[in-house]
Image 1 (cartoon, rainbow, N blue to C red):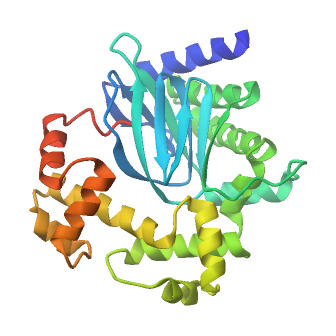
Image 2: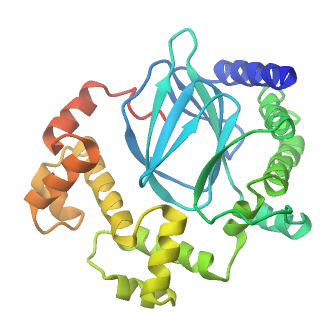
Length: 303
Protein backbone atom coordinates (compact mmCIF):
# COMPACT_ATOMS: atom_id res chain seq x y z
CA UNK A 1 0.00 0.00 0.00
CA UNK A 2 2.79 2.44 0.93
CA UNK A 3 4.66 1.65 -2.28
CA UNK A 4 1.50 2.15 -4.33
CA UNK A 5 0.95 5.56 -2.73
CA UNK A 6 4.52 6.54 -3.61
CA UNK A 7 3.93 5.39 -7.18
CA UNK A 8 0.71 7.44 -7.42
CA UNK A 9 2.51 10.48 -6.01
CA UNK A 10 5.19 10.19 -8.69
CA UNK A 11 2.58 9.59 -11.39
CA UNK A 12 0.70 12.73 -10.34
CA UNK A 13 3.93 14.73 -10.33
CA UNK A 14 4.85 13.49 -13.81
CA UNK A 15 1.41 14.31 -15.22
CA UNK A 16 1.41 17.73 -13.58
CA UNK A 17 4.83 18.52 -15.01
CA UNK A 18 3.86 17.60 -18.56
CA UNK A 19 0.56 19.50 -18.81
CA UNK A 20 0.22 23.24 -19.40
CA UNK A 21 -3.14 23.77 -17.74
CA UNK A 22 -6.61 22.29 -17.60
CA UNK A 23 -7.70 20.11 -20.49
CA UNK A 24 -6.46 17.21 -22.60
CA UNK A 25 -2.79 17.14 -23.59
CA UNK A 26 -1.21 15.00 -26.30
CA UNK A 27 2.25 13.59 -25.52
CA UNK A 28 5.23 12.30 -27.50
CA UNK A 29 3.89 8.83 -26.65
CA UNK A 30 1.43 8.36 -29.51
CA UNK A 31 -1.29 6.55 -27.58
CA UNK A 32 -1.03 8.49 -24.29
CA UNK A 33 -3.06 11.61 -23.42
CA UNK A 34 -2.72 13.46 -20.11
CA UNK A 35 -5.63 15.26 -18.42
CA UNK A 36 -5.82 17.94 -15.74
CA UNK A 37 -8.78 19.74 -14.18
CA UNK A 38 -8.34 22.19 -11.32
CA UNK A 39 -12.09 22.33 -10.63
CA UNK A 40 -15.06 20.00 -10.55
CA UNK A 41 -16.91 19.89 -13.87
CA UNK A 42 -20.45 19.47 -15.12
CA UNK A 43 -21.42 16.13 -16.70
CA UNK A 44 -20.33 16.08 -20.33
CA UNK A 45 -21.12 13.47 -22.97
CA UNK A 46 -18.36 11.75 -24.86
CA UNK A 47 -17.87 8.65 -26.97
CA UNK A 48 -15.24 6.62 -25.13
CA UNK A 49 -13.04 4.53 -27.40
CA UNK A 50 -11.14 1.35 -26.41
CA UNK A 51 -8.62 2.57 -23.87
CA UNK A 52 -7.32 2.56 -20.31
CA UNK A 53 -8.00 5.51 -18.03
CA UNK A 54 -5.91 5.62 -14.84
CA UNK A 55 -6.52 8.29 -12.21
CA UNK A 56 -3.49 9.52 -10.28
CA UNK A 57 -5.20 12.29 -8.28
CA UNK A 58 -8.78 13.48 -7.74
CA UNK A 59 -12.09 11.73 -8.40
CA UNK A 60 -14.52 11.47 -11.31
CA UNK A 61 -17.71 9.63 -12.25
CA UNK A 62 -18.79 8.18 -15.58
CA UNK A 63 -22.38 7.13 -16.34
CA UNK A 64 -23.09 4.48 -18.96
CA UNK A 65 -26.78 3.82 -19.40
CA UNK A 66 -28.01 3.45 -15.82
CA UNK A 67 -24.64 2.34 -14.43
CA UNK A 68 -22.31 4.75 -12.59
CA UNK A 69 -18.55 4.08 -12.48
CA UNK A 70 -16.50 5.88 -9.83
CA UNK A 71 -12.81 6.65 -10.22
CA UNK A 72 -10.39 7.48 -7.41
CA UNK A 73 -6.59 7.63 -7.20
CA UNK A 74 -5.19 4.22 -8.15
CA UNK A 75 -8.37 3.10 -9.92
CA UNK A 76 -8.48 2.47 -13.64
CA UNK A 77 -11.23 2.08 -16.19
CA UNK A 78 -11.17 -0.13 -19.26
CA UNK A 79 -13.36 0.53 -22.31
CA UNK A 80 -13.53 -2.22 -24.93
CA UNK A 81 -15.96 -0.67 -27.46
CA UNK A 82 -16.87 2.81 -28.66
CA UNK A 83 -19.47 3.75 -26.03
CA UNK A 84 -21.41 6.99 -25.43
CA UNK A 85 -21.20 7.97 -21.77
CA UNK A 86 -21.39 10.99 -19.45
CA UNK A 87 -18.36 11.90 -17.37
CA UNK A 88 -17.48 14.61 -14.88
CA UNK A 89 -14.81 15.44 -12.31
CA UNK A 90 -16.27 15.39 -8.79
CA UNK A 91 -13.19 16.21 -6.70
CA UNK A 92 -10.47 18.68 -7.71
CA UNK A 93 -8.95 21.96 -6.52
CA UNK A 94 -6.30 24.34 -7.92
CA UNK A 95 -3.87 23.09 -5.25
CA UNK A 96 -4.71 19.43 -5.86
CA UNK A 97 -6.14 19.07 -9.38
CA UNK A 98 -7.67 16.00 -10.94
CA UNK A 99 -4.94 14.21 -12.92
CA UNK A 100 -5.26 11.16 -15.11
CA UNK A 101 -3.91 9.53 -18.24
CA UNK A 102 -5.60 7.84 -21.17
CA UNK A 103 -3.82 4.99 -22.92
CA UNK A 104 -5.40 3.96 -26.23
CA UNK A 105 -5.17 0.28 -27.02
CA UNK A 106 -3.18 -0.85 -30.05
CA UNK A 107 -5.37 -3.72 -31.36
CA UNK A 108 -2.47 -5.37 -33.22
CA UNK A 109 -0.20 -5.41 -30.18
CA UNK A 110 -3.09 -6.51 -27.97
CA UNK A 111 -4.06 -9.32 -30.35
CA UNK A 112 -0.50 -10.67 -30.51
CA UNK A 113 -0.18 -10.63 -26.72
CA UNK A 114 -3.57 -12.28 -26.23
CA UNK A 115 -2.30 -15.30 -28.15
CA UNK A 116 0.67 -15.65 -25.80
CA UNK A 117 -0.91 -14.85 -22.43
CA UNK A 118 -3.04 -17.64 -20.89
CA UNK A 119 -6.56 -16.51 -19.91
CA UNK A 120 -6.86 -15.79 -16.18
CA UNK A 121 -8.49 -18.56 -14.13
CA UNK A 122 -11.99 -18.24 -12.76
CA UNK A 123 -15.36 -17.29 -14.14
CA UNK A 124 -15.23 -15.17 -17.32
CA UNK A 125 -16.17 -11.55 -16.76
CA UNK A 126 -19.46 -10.25 -18.14
CA UNK A 127 -19.11 -8.64 -21.55
CA UNK A 128 -20.02 -5.12 -20.35
CA UNK A 129 -17.90 -2.77 -22.46
CA UNK A 130 -16.73 -0.63 -19.53
CA UNK A 131 -15.54 -1.34 -16.02
CA UNK A 132 -13.54 0.28 -13.23
CA UNK A 133 -11.10 -1.64 -11.01
CA UNK A 134 -8.32 -1.09 -8.48
CA UNK A 135 -4.89 -1.04 -10.11
CA UNK A 136 -2.37 -3.46 -8.64
CA UNK A 137 1.22 -2.51 -7.91
CA UNK A 138 2.49 -4.22 -11.09
CA UNK A 139 0.15 -2.23 -13.36
CA UNK A 140 0.97 1.05 -11.60
CA UNK A 141 4.69 0.35 -11.97
CA UNK A 142 4.29 -0.38 -15.69
CA UNK A 143 2.39 2.88 -16.25
CA UNK A 144 5.00 4.78 -14.24
CA UNK A 145 7.83 3.37 -16.36
CA UNK A 146 6.03 4.51 -19.51
CA UNK A 147 5.46 8.04 -18.22
CA UNK A 148 9.04 8.36 -17.03
CA UNK A 149 10.07 8.14 -20.67
CA UNK A 150 8.55 11.59 -21.19
CA UNK A 151 11.68 12.82 -19.40
CA UNK A 152 13.96 10.58 -21.48
CA UNK A 153 13.09 11.22 -25.15
CA UNK A 154 16.18 9.42 -26.42
CA UNK A 155 15.02 6.16 -24.81
CA UNK A 156 11.35 6.56 -25.73
CA UNK A 157 11.46 4.94 -29.23
CA UNK A 158 13.20 1.83 -27.81
CA UNK A 159 11.65 1.42 -24.36
CA UNK A 160 8.21 2.88 -25.06
CA UNK A 161 6.84 -0.16 -26.94
CA UNK A 162 8.17 -2.45 -24.20
CA UNK A 163 6.39 -0.44 -21.50
CA UNK A 164 3.18 -0.44 -23.55
CA UNK A 165 3.39 -4.21 -23.94
CA UNK A 166 3.81 -4.62 -20.20
CA UNK A 167 0.71 -2.52 -19.52
CA UNK A 168 -1.32 -4.66 -21.92
CA UNK A 169 0.15 -7.82 -20.39
CA UNK A 170 -0.86 -6.74 -16.87
CA UNK A 171 -4.40 -6.05 -18.08
CA UNK A 172 -4.66 -9.37 -19.95
CA UNK A 173 -3.29 -11.32 -16.99
CA UNK A 174 -5.42 -9.46 -14.43
CA UNK A 175 -9.08 -9.48 -13.42
CA UNK A 176 -10.13 -7.70 -16.64
CA UNK A 177 -8.24 -10.13 -18.88
CA UNK A 178 -11.34 -11.80 -20.28
CA UNK A 179 -12.92 -8.43 -20.99
CA UNK A 180 -9.74 -7.22 -22.73
CA UNK A 181 -9.83 -10.27 -25.00
CA UNK A 182 -13.22 -9.17 -26.31
CA UNK A 183 -11.37 -6.46 -28.26
CA UNK A 184 -9.50 -9.13 -30.21
CA UNK A 185 -12.46 -11.42 -30.93
CA UNK A 186 -13.53 -11.67 -34.56
CA UNK A 187 -16.20 -14.34 -34.01
CA UNK A 188 -19.01 -15.02 -31.56
CA UNK A 189 -21.91 -13.02 -30.22
CA UNK A 190 -19.81 -10.38 -28.48
CA UNK A 191 -17.97 -9.73 -31.76
CA UNK A 192 -21.32 -9.38 -33.53
CA UNK A 193 -22.40 -6.82 -30.92
CA UNK A 194 -19.19 -4.94 -31.70
CA UNK A 195 -20.23 -4.87 -35.35
CA UNK A 196 -23.67 -3.61 -34.35
CA UNK A 197 -22.07 -0.81 -32.31
CA UNK A 198 -19.91 0.16 -35.29
CA UNK A 199 -22.93 0.05 -37.65
CA UNK A 200 -24.98 2.33 -35.40
CA UNK A 201 -22.00 4.67 -35.10
CA UNK A 202 -22.01 5.13 -38.88
CA UNK A 203 -25.79 5.24 -39.34
CA UNK A 204 -27.21 6.78 -36.15
CA UNK A 205 -28.76 9.71 -38.04
CA UNK A 206 -30.94 7.31 -40.06
CA UNK A 207 -34.06 5.48 -38.90
CA UNK A 208 -33.68 1.74 -38.43
CA UNK A 209 -35.42 -1.12 -36.68
CA UNK A 210 -33.96 -3.77 -34.40
CA UNK A 211 -34.86 -6.28 -37.11
CA UNK A 212 -32.85 -4.37 -39.72
CA UNK A 213 -29.85 -4.06 -37.40
CA UNK A 214 -30.01 -7.75 -36.49
CA UNK A 215 -30.04 -8.65 -40.19
CA UNK A 216 -27.02 -6.41 -40.81
CA UNK A 217 -24.89 -8.25 -38.23
CA UNK A 218 -26.33 -11.75 -38.61
CA UNK A 219 -28.17 -12.20 -35.31
CA UNK A 220 -31.76 -12.77 -34.32
CA UNK A 221 -33.48 -9.63 -32.96
CA UNK A 222 -33.96 -11.18 -29.50
CA UNK A 223 -30.33 -12.32 -29.26
CA UNK A 224 -29.03 -8.95 -30.44
CA UNK A 225 -31.20 -7.09 -27.93
CA UNK A 226 -30.03 -9.31 -25.04
CA UNK A 227 -26.32 -9.25 -25.84
CA UNK A 228 -26.23 -5.59 -26.90
CA UNK A 229 -27.65 -4.57 -23.55
CA UNK A 230 -25.16 -6.82 -21.73
CA UNK A 231 -22.25 -5.06 -23.47
CA UNK A 232 -23.45 -1.44 -23.51
CA UNK A 233 -26.00 -1.26 -20.64
CA UNK A 234 -28.42 0.13 -23.26
CA UNK A 235 -30.73 -1.11 -25.97
CA UNK A 236 -29.68 -0.40 -29.58
CA UNK A 237 -32.27 2.38 -29.89
CA UNK A 238 -31.17 3.97 -26.59
CA UNK A 239 -27.59 3.80 -27.90
CA UNK A 240 -28.68 5.54 -31.12
CA UNK A 241 -30.54 8.21 -29.14
CA UNK A 242 -27.47 9.05 -27.06
CA UNK A 243 -25.33 9.40 -30.18
CA UNK A 244 -27.95 11.66 -31.79
CA UNK A 245 -28.26 13.89 -28.73
CA UNK A 246 -24.49 14.15 -28.28
CA UNK A 247 -24.05 14.98 -31.96
CA UNK A 248 -26.77 17.65 -31.83
CA UNK A 249 -25.24 19.18 -28.72
CA UNK A 250 -21.87 19.39 -30.45
CA UNK A 251 -23.43 20.99 -33.57
CA UNK A 252 -25.18 23.67 -31.51
CA UNK A 253 -22.15 24.36 -29.33
CA UNK A 254 -19.37 24.32 -31.94
CA UNK A 255 -21.15 25.39 -35.12
CA UNK A 256 -23.78 27.64 -33.50
CA UNK A 257 -26.61 25.79 -35.28
CA UNK A 258 -30.11 26.51 -34.03
CA UNK A 259 -32.17 23.88 -32.19
CA UNK A 260 -34.51 22.97 -35.06
CA UNK A 261 -31.70 22.62 -37.62
CA UNK A 262 -29.63 20.48 -35.22
CA UNK A 263 -32.61 18.23 -34.50
CA UNK A 264 -33.32 17.64 -38.18
CA UNK A 265 -29.67 17.14 -39.05
CA UNK A 266 -29.17 14.31 -36.54
CA UNK A 267 -32.31 12.50 -37.67
CA UNK A 268 -35.22 13.80 -35.59
CA UNK A 269 -38.42 14.46 -37.52
CA UNK A 270 -40.01 16.42 -34.65
CA UNK A 271 -38.07 19.31 -33.03
CA UNK A 272 -40.44 19.19 -30.07
CA UNK A 273 -39.64 15.50 -29.47
CA UNK A 274 -35.96 16.34 -29.76
CA UNK A 275 -36.28 19.09 -27.14
CA UNK A 276 -38.13 16.75 -24.74
CA UNK A 277 -35.53 13.99 -25.07
CA UNK A 278 -32.68 16.50 -24.87
CA UNK A 279 -34.03 17.90 -21.60
CA UNK A 280 -34.48 14.42 -20.11
CA UNK A 281 -30.92 13.48 -21.06
CA UNK A 282 -29.00 16.68 -20.25
CA UNK A 283 -31.29 18.18 -17.59
CA UNK A 284 -32.11 21.44 -19.38
CA UNK A 285 -33.73 22.58 -22.66
CA UNK A 286 -31.27 22.83 -25.56
CA UNK A 287 -30.92 26.62 -25.73
CA UNK A 288 -30.38 26.99 -21.98
CA UNK A 289 -27.94 24.09 -21.87
CA UNK A 290 -25.83 25.49 -24.73
CA UNK A 291 -25.76 28.94 -23.13
CA UNK A 292 -24.54 27.40 -19.88
CA UNK A 293 -21.86 25.39 -21.68
CA UNK A 294 -20.57 28.48 -23.49
CA UNK A 295 -20.43 30.39 -20.21
CA UNK A 296 -18.26 27.68 -18.66
CA UNK A 297 -16.18 26.88 -21.76
CA UNK A 298 -12.70 25.57 -21.03
CA UNK A 299 -13.65 23.53 -17.96
CA UNK A 300 -16.71 21.46 -18.78
CA UNK A 301 -15.10 19.00 -21.15
CA UNK A 302 -12.48 17.54 -18.81
CA UNK A 303 -13.39 14.02 -17.74
